[in-house]
Image 1 (cartoon, helix red, strand yellow):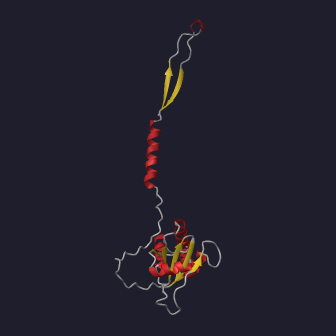
Image 2: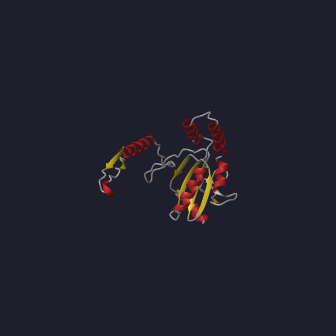
Length: 213
């Protein structure tokens, strides 16, 4: 609170005239400090802190060495192989030369992180067109407030796990760059790929990659 402190006058003027008393104002800031702390506490308790965004990766379980298992067929799958500074890919199941598929053994195709027909972004956009197209419809419903944020996130998550959505396996050799892995994951996130699984190269894939290089 403001307080007024009076200072006494005296008979110090000429011919014994008494001077008028002077008054000074003193402001007590204690209540203001208390109010500032109350406001700070209020804003801290009512604020919503941003949550860190993470990209879920599905890591396959380790199979004991020498044990063979029947791997389930993945619908609409694509496999990226990172080697040195290069990026290779193939679609569908892997068929070695000893066990070729209907169209023969698997062939690796080279991609890049730039622009053009063989860019990773353009390939993913064409493969995952089902999710991208339906995401636009969900965003329009969200803008018109026809669905809530929670419903949008849930439906988008279900959409990325649909059988029509592309699933991506990421495999690297010993010389693959960490930067290439990060760039690839960024491109997968942009293309709204929901199922991403880093895994190891098979012996047949290593042999094919060796021939390719």
